[in-house]
Image (cartoon, rainbow, N blue to C red; front, top):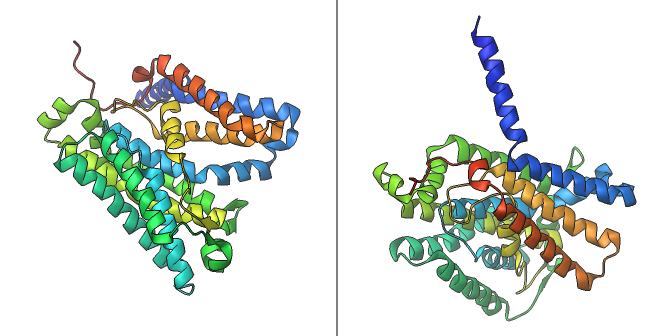
Length: 339
């Protein structure tokens, strides 16, 4: 009979911890931002506009979660957007050459090609022990250069793409696009992988305490390699989504988008040093960027100022995040030994 009150007390303690956490503060910040814009423009919080914001942010959700896996291991992947662009342009060219191929082979090709590009980073970091920031900075340039080589600088336009290729992610279901539902499924999959699988938990250990990881029989370098392959596969899939959503493929696709993925992670409380972060925090960080991006044009800010203002907001949010007590608020599997 005493078990029920104990369970109730445990649930209340968990609720109190979440209310005091960074994730709750970030959720409140998103609500305050949406309400503040809605006071001037009520349609901003209309269900149709909120659905558009989710659709507009769906690719960032997926790419930020992929980047999170890499950062958790203490590395970073600057080539995700270039991977996205190269894979997106490639599948667009394949679709233009074989319009009757169907969507399923395109998705498989995007996943395999993205994973192969991620594996190239993984081999350089894992086997040669090269710094990830240097490796992925180099592959960023290589992947962008490959786009120019295979296209000659030409664009692949919507009239060269099949209706199935363009329409797949736009299929509506319960008021949301299929792209949004895929992003929601990706969030659920990331939550399950990082919280309930050995490999997911080992990503935290590999970045949080490398010495302890070795003693526990976990190879941190192997876990980094796994994270790069996951990141590459997701980036490749996002390449198809990006090209299909904007109905155009060219060399500068998603240029600089890797910085938004990293910003979403940092705003969401993922430690750049590795080993700390939550899926909820990354999703809320990406949603914050999505709200800012959609609010600025509505307010009437000049396009010339939008990038600068968005960058300033991200910088302030990152500074506030860095000065917070993130290491105590986030999720960590193994604590570092006190000095």
